[in-house]
Length: 141
Image 1 (tube, helix red, strand yellow):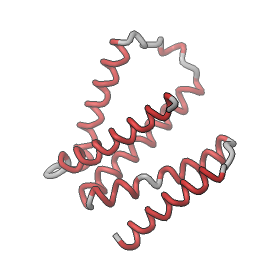
Image 2 (image 1 turned 120 degrees about the vertical axis):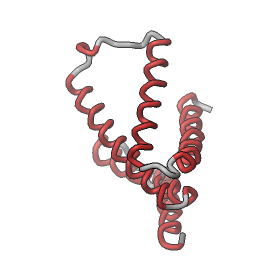
Image 3 (image 1 turned 180 degrees about the vertical axis):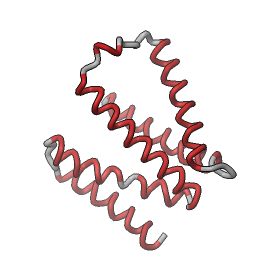
Image 4 (image 1 turned 30 degrees about the vertical axis):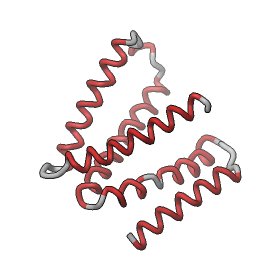
């Protein structure tokens, strides 16, 4: 198995833990406050990681292009987390999390439009099956 695939599987596993722990943690607290706490924890964990691995880079050396897209990514992440935590507070995590994974379908489409990636039959089939699963949950869940 390629290294990127191992990291992708680890990401999926930790995303599953995120859903379960988040559902347990958001009970009895405002979902926005829960997202703030989660974000502070993430900031601390990543800061420790970067400092311990000596990966800190001088901020002035980071290009404007990089700053713009990392800020936009951060905004999108924040909005995603706010919506996700509210959704798991209101609904069953076993339904919310799979619907949230419809992001895969959006990534395939945006990858083609924005990044010029090629649509392979494997990507189409996988994305279509994820879409169908999400629709089953939305319509019948």
